[in-house]
Figure 1 (tube, rainbow, N blue to C red):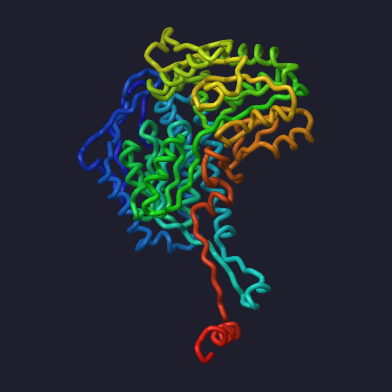
Figure 2 (cartoon, rainbow, N blue to C red):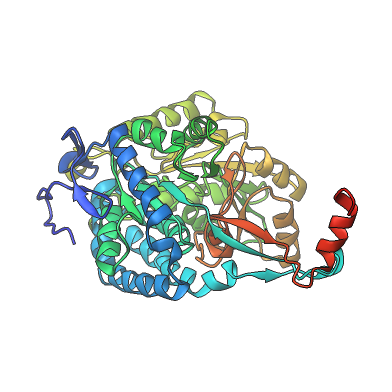
Amino acid sequence: MIEYKDKEKLEEQKVFIGGEWTASGNGDTYSIINPSTGKPFVECQKCNAEDAKQAIDAAREAFDHGPWPEMSFEDRIKIFYKASDMIDKVSSELGVLDAMSNGVPITTNNATILNMSPNFKYVCKRVKEVMGSKMVAGEYSMGMETEFWREPDGVVAIITPWNVPFWQMALKLPSALIAGNTVVFKPASQTPLSALEVGKIFGEAGLPKGALNVITGPGSVVGAELARSDKVDHISLTGEVATGEETVRNASGSLKKVTLELGGKSPNIIFDDFPIDEAAKMAVLGISLANGEECFAGTRVLVQDTIYEEVAKKTAELYGSSKVGNALLPDTNLGPLVTEEQMKKVLRYIEFGKEEGAKLLCGGERLLDGELKDGFFVAPTVFSEVSNDMKIAQEEIFGPVLSIIPFSTEEEAIEIANDSKFGLGAGIMSMDREKATRVARKLRAGFIFINMWHMVSPDMPYGGYKQSGWGRMAGDEGIKQFTQIKSIYPDWDGATGSLMKTLLLPGG
């Protein structure tokens, strides 16, 4: 485990290729900045395309000739359980490493690790059922005992973002590995530390060399090589829409499988039968994970007009009272944004909101007081009088900015909610169970929260509609996503074969 002390630099990190810890081929490194302090605290390897090719070759060799794909489910599961137990023992340390890297409060990082770390054991419990052979009734196959089974895709490249690093990794990596794939894993450049630790843990748990490779470096170079390589069978990316589009273009040359989890602009619909104080809490809860830098954050709060003014006022009061501070402090509600660039982007969107006529109820500026002066802090921000055609309502800001939009009827709420290029998540706040269920069925989104937010379970599929992505992660569907189906047509008694010979062969 990486040893750390507050305000001290960490040792230079290596990358994990073919079971060995090594430096980038050209010796280049880059600094990770602690967004709470604005200061660098660790050097990581700046891998290039040649390093990516080495990792791909290691994974290719491990899949084509190594033991991992040929191991029994039982042997894979033993390694997984050992690794999972090791991860659980260092979960709090992993949370610290991620908080130092992305500025998300330590309490949130710890919660996301605890939420998704069970996926390492869940896949163990489900892999045999999901990938075992399935018999098909012979009614349409002339009585043959047909069956199909699932096999691993091959070499899988996984690319994850910086907002909830462990959580995003744990959505994909367990499913891909347990199915028998070999993996090249590239975490976001800003937040690779927990991924490198997981690579170390799997190595110590006995995972064969080359089955898991972890490399760091710029996505524009390393990620592009992973997408282009004809030795990679499947690339799974979580990122912004532009990155997803570029990945698809790069992958098109080899027609490899591509799964994507992209952006979101999730609506949080609050009906007037919901208590006003609770409505404000649920509005804030929808954006409270990861400083608002979360793809399924409820950044569009749709409030029925009969309670609109009261909910908007109370939401601004509650969100505006958030404790902003260093991500490592246990009482911090809102930490700094991940980079100075991301902070400037969020501040630009706040200016767009003002220019388009939205009413700023709280926040709207960079915080520079006291210990915040060197970090990338933006005050919790709430806009009211927002129309759904404004930039702040349509484009993903990825920061602590809420847009509160009025609606009159159930039908109008559904229309506004679906008026987005995204369709990842959505929320419905109503005490009317029948209405909430009816609305949920009409929303074009991959998952719906009703009277709550942010509880995502490892046994449920996760993903979105429209430009929020392709495919699903987690649950049984998450395992299936990293497999191919093979259909078997056996003719054990020879009857079907004889008939086909008669029909198709000369003189048959």
